[in-house]
Length: 223
Image (cartoon, rainbow, N blue to C red; front, top):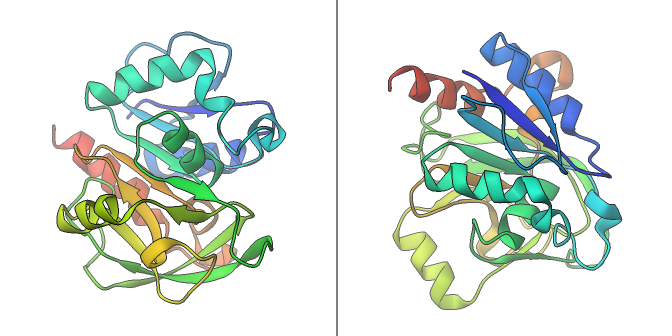
């Protein structure tokens, strides 16, 4: 699998994501600077990492969503290329229109940085096939603007279409219906606030995030 990690000014989880992808795929991902207008030829998995792109000015992810490379990411997603956005990457994907809803300031106006329990809501997507519905995962979070918001009709649609991938097992940041991760309608774009790339092996405290990347690899190998 040939992967790529998008790098913005202020990204600080890009190397963590690159290490995770290399561990699972056996290949170093391409590190693609935001000013590029094209992805490397043959890219078949894209990671949009966490951090504070553009210093979170204006709105978290808003400026990064308008970087030149995002046009290529949007085109790739439309072709069915898997895209994962983690933390700030989730914010970027919502701002780019690849996912519904928005990430607002945490309830309580506090930065949340700790390990949380997630519940797997959908185990049939290409990102979650390595889990079971209802399985609980321990994965760290580190965000200030992770409060997921969408109007009631959108939330009902996400629930009805099985597009809620992960839910917090307990309130973490005020997210509507404790949503921690959502999928696009086609199922090839996942945005999540927790950091699976920081939960890749027991030495890190948990290996519960590894199956996300392994699930994508297995799905790509089966194509």
